[in-house]
Image (cartoon, rainbow, N blue to C red; front, side, top):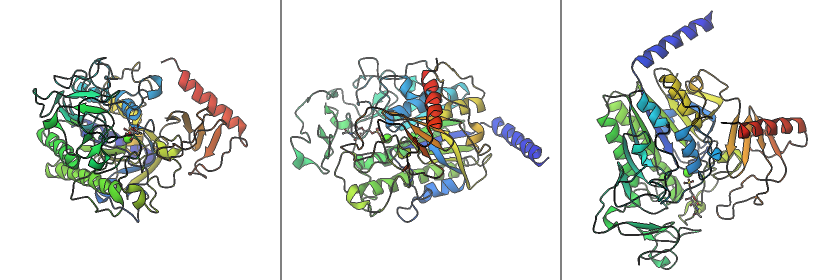
Length: 501
Ligand code: NG6
Ligand code: CA
């Protein structure tokens, strides 16, 4: 009886919620690990009070995943609902890569557009731009987010450490000067500007590995660029600019249902937060960037409150992959991290097939439907946003292009404690989850630890099997003890990989 009343009330609230379509703000952090936020495991170190406030007013997932252990593949799956490994060319892209999502394809933002929403992206894109020749920096850029479901876009093409170091608004480079055209090259040096390799004395932050090409704002980048002097960003201002653009977007769409994808640059390298955050965490640049990220989250929450939109807005916070401490620059993070574990109790981090690669913070707030202060151990993935929102908004899903996205709406709303029955995890190899079992497919990648980042990658030539309930840190390989489970997990993984989609 009680259950049926609960179900009835849930249906009533569901109907009411649908009557007034909720706004959706997806805050997508870069490289924030499972233990980074103080509402996860980091209780003695850096405080992230705004993220804490968000978690306290919604639901916090403890077994939630990005689709892959790095940026481009995770974002590809987030946008399309297709596992990245089904499509070649979805690895980490250079800044001049052609668009990898074809115009006309259903995407997460186009689902919202089909339901009558205004849609906007602010922040990091990293899914390529332009036709097969790549982006045209000096004229309108084809296949930009504006062609893929976003009505408004203010982005950087790839990452903060890759050229060109310019912002692009609605398919055009901001502050572009036709007399100073932009050129970008990832194969060889162009122009006569100093590079990190040739002029290390000009760097305010030395490179550790890679990142020794054109110097912009005292930081060596990946790739060479020339021109566009007026258009170049100052890294210190990036957090402020992205946040302000996100707030403007909310403000100007307050009367419409809107979907805002706010993809912060924090806390990716180069970590050059605004001067007001520098030195404030006591844990080096990485910690300072985390404070800046938390500030951005706070500004968004404050704006929604000011405009009276808090009740009717779904706010989601997550990250595109696990943490990394040294990702290419000597930025004093490694020396100052001390006992702090950005990945909490998990093994591995960014780039790893252990849980630390893809298990990330994941918070959903929706006061109309989600009871505040909940924690859920359901298995969830960012790949499911597309189908879940499509179902909620009564938009038809294109199963041919979004084959892997599942409707997990009830899980996201805290009504289903189980979530996915299985999940494929991906880095360069495959991980596979069913309940508390974690299987890592053997492969011949002969590298236990990444030579650059020193992250444990998790690859082995033999099968690995872990029981995450008893062994969250993946220390004891049970494959020899449970050969039948290994066999079954391999068969199930294999059938997902080979499904005719
Ligand atoms: C790697 C970069 C790293 C970072 C990463 C992308 C080197 C040696 N390393 O290739 O610094 O930029 O790509 O990170 O260049 S991600 O979060 O966008 O996937
Ligand atoms: Ca990332």
